Length: 69
Image 1 (cartoon, rainbow, N blue to C red):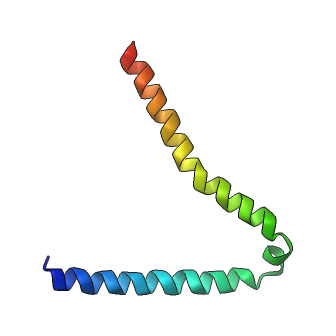
Image 2: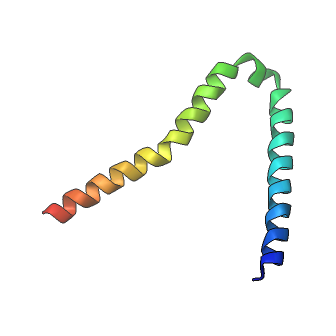
């Protein structure tokens, strides 16, 4: 793939990403349930964001323990 194609796809992808999250933030920000439970939503988002790292850490620890046997 040439750099010109890569750059074009990269710009298109970035624009779609920004538009998607901007409109999603606007949509979810206007929902009454989200507005009344914003702190709970933020804690939930942080918790879900940390889970992949925790799972990977546990998987790595188990693999290291199996390799040590």
